[in-house]
Image (cartoon, rainbow, N blue to C red; front, side, top):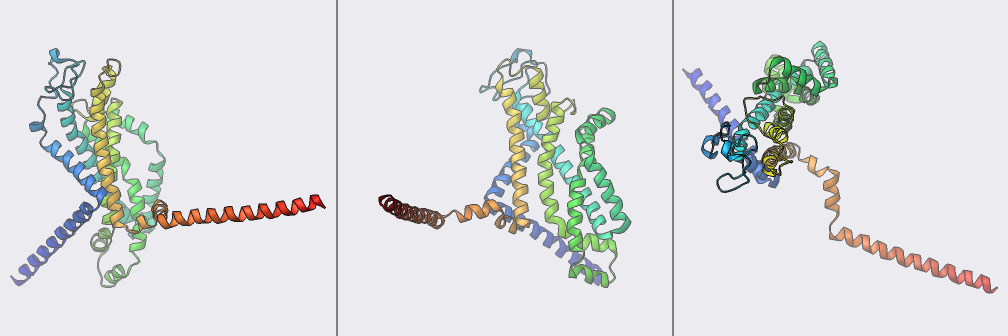
Amino acid sequence: MKQQRNLAQRLGLGMKRRASSAGSLLGKVWAHKQGKVGLVMVGFLVLVAVFAPYIAPYDPYDVSQRTTKGLPPSSKHLLGTTINTGQDIFSMLVYGTRVSLVVGVTSGVCIAIVGSIIGVAAGYLGGAVDTLIMRLVDIMLVIPTLPLVIVLTNVLGRDFWIIILIFVALGWTGLARTIRSLVLVLKNTNYVKAAELAGASRWHIMTRHILPGTSHLVIMSTALSSAGIMVAEAGLSFLGLGDPTAISWGKMLAEAQSGGALLFGAWWWIFAPGLGIFLAVFGFMRLGLVLEEIANPRMKRTSSVYRLFRSLDSSYVEEVFNSMDDYQVMGSEVTGGGGQRYGTGLEA
């Protein structure tokens, strides 16, 4: 009974520590100006995706609205309607948030999990495991991604879960290489050496000691990867390689192009999905950059841009103008002296 109580207490303490660390991380992000912007934008998109049936005024999959084709934005249709089918574009935008967020966030999280596990194994185990993984990474990095994605979508299908699987299968290599470089440093730290001397297994050391040390990099990579994959999904859907049964922002752009939105002046059909892609990518990019800055505070201080703007204060500008004045005075003295000597020479 005592052992069970001790185990329960340890588990409770572990959960409290994790919750407090997650809360402190969110607090740091919220305290940052750019992080606050990113959290607000991402949180807004999540709420829109969750409550899409209550926000959208019309059914975006209803293509039978023949009497409402090509209507401009109004109080009844906030972003107008499509030219060919009469679908409400605002409703399509709201439901497209679901697909774009699911594909982006799910792919980003899966890439982070696969890349971190493979990177930790390669960096800590070393030897033949490291060589095999790194040679596989080198091969996958030189393979052209877009043609391979086009082939795989035509062979495996265009369901968005298959698209997520393809993104994960091709996107873990860069993170794995980065995690491996960090693990090569962490494996030589004192606490890892102490765990090895205490007889801890390799699996225990990798999961309990090394993997938590790479968590900041994994979280930052998840946010940035999610933003990149949203753009990639929109590009695939725009090329006609997305899920034909689901509405996404890329598919809206593809339908706008095929429906002649620019030809008929239906700018709202292009503006709506473009705005959604911009907000999602901008929000996730803000979060990723802020998380990277929180994980590595020296990144901002050692940045050349930061040093440049820090040096450009009032005292620096004043020193520059004073030096320019001194240089002009010296130049005038040299010129005047030279002229006197030159004139004296001529007189002689």
